[in-house]
Image (cartoon, rainbow, N blue to C red; front, side, top):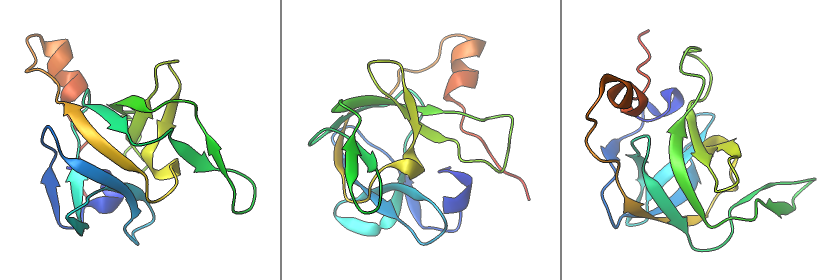
Length: 134
């Protein structure tokens, strides 16, 4: 499942080689959309490696953008113990984590690698997406 605010949006799981775009889905959050079908949210597993077409940008003052200084990231989930907060985040090579919903819209990324199958309980829990039960 994608972040909780994308549960009402048509979605599919990410695949290696997918070309994604950051998109506002009109649900109060941004997420990844398939470039071939921007109405489809692409759900990424924690541990997935992504490469962006240019340095990732977040909104700055007014309508400007600020680069985070990196073109690669690993998808993570944060705030797992708080069900109604955003969970989808990117971890950059410097260790900084930024929520996916905070990225500027229209950035392009390619899925480089999906996480390997978990071999321990801790790895399985790390790759488990947060499920919200209403």
